[in-house]
Length: 180
Image (tube, rainbow, N blue to C red; front, side):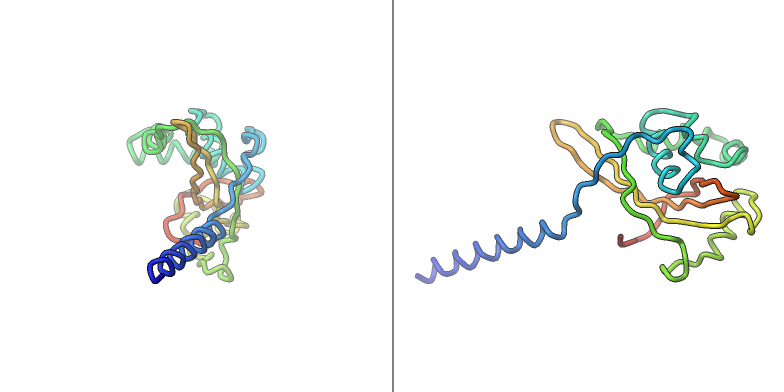
């Protein structure tokens, strides 16, 4: 009888544990239409998605559109390498990319726990923008769906994007923990 009780309790803990895990797991996102060259600079979610899509589809024109004019040339000269090729080599995956989606974002503000003034200064230093030209900064969460060997897998990337004179641009990948 004692063995049966232990088995029953173990079974119930397992069932409730699995149920709890299912509630915690993120819901799958819906893949969105690919970003067009005309959409790239119209919003933070578009520039972040375009960045990923350009790398996964080998679209240099789309990649270049994610940055202000002249920025990639300056960065390439300073690094002594082709920036696009560097990103492609780092982000090689062994699976097919099915698509991307804008999952969520946070405004890069003090209310959300970020030092907006320091980030604006960082952007100006790296992009040669004037401080007054930077109106918004966001942290974008972008989902990517991969498929391979009969399975699909969703993964998430986080990017810092900013608005300069009405156009949105990529800055960098987000380094740190963030709850969305």
